Image (tube, rainbow, N blue to C red):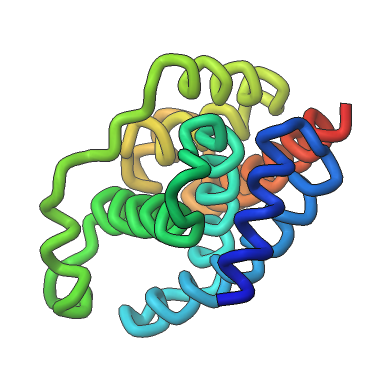
Length: 184
């Protein structure tokens, strides 16, 4: 229970504009999310690189959506919901076979998409503009438009491994941009 109390206190301070608390919150959440995704993906025969991409996506979503958190509610279920939806989106994007997905996750693949509000979308698009074009293309194609790696490689005019590298590096750069914005 102490993790809930500590994380919620950091979130409330973050919502009040405390940049140091926001950085600490995102760092602690990254550790928790990394363990969560590695466990879930390992059960599906997936790798640590995919888990790391999901951590970056979830941290970005938490940063963007932090204004939607209701302080009257528990914090960790809110984070878990975001993490879960990011996992579901990943499974859909990668066209995971139902045979590869543990039974407790199978229903989630067919759930409704998590809609992002216009304000958050604008914020992400502004951040994406700061990335090199090849990273923008890869992230837009796979993470936003839902294309496969192969389809993104064709769209972006690069190899599949190039798309994966650009997504991974781009998500890390976005996380760094967010950290810079919270210290300003």
